Image 1 (cartoon, rainbow, N blue to C red):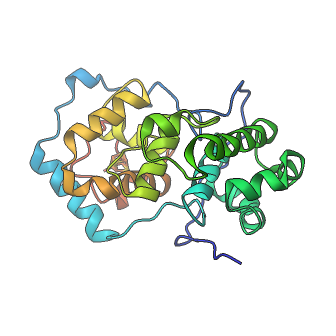
Image 2: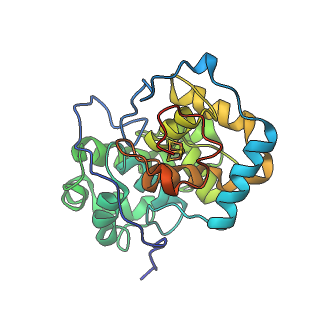
Length: 256
Ligand code: SF4
């Protein structure tokens, strides 16, 4: 039986209930497109390259090898986990996939399991009916068009049912070591609050972060920022007093 990758345990943030949505495609959690700050981004002093480097050197020193928290066995199960995690927590997805992945870790095995049984495994996850349908459809497409393997380009991954830009960025980064920046609700908040990469949409923040973060940090930058947002720069009560970058952060409401 294959061994499930279980990244270092960390507490999950508050659970978000599945909101109404017509599709499970795109983001894992709904991203508020209005940053929670009273600051006018145009008046925020941009970070200098030296400040950005300093921030990421601190992240690296504190956590040299950050890991994502979605458990998976291989690129295929990572792809499925990301698709299942739209508008759900990683912890909730992991609880469901711990039983699923040992018996369905390839597209062929997933199709053999079938949509109905798959639904039983994932029924604790929000939007599970749509997601189960997508997982079956993407498995069929992987077999039909990609030899049963997860493709390695953004366009190809985005062409799969249930997969959007962020899914592609997570898979390219975690499965194939590409220097991509997946923007979830945490990265979106941190990019805006800190002033590192203000933007009204996840794509703006993604491109802004790619512009300012030195290449040597890009492989892990996505995880450092997610973990920073999940455990320190919390949405309601950011823990500024213990924040590694509180002297660099531009948020006018920071509490230090
Ligand atoms: S100082 Fe506060 S607001 Fe700024 S990044 Fe740190 S936790 Fe977030």
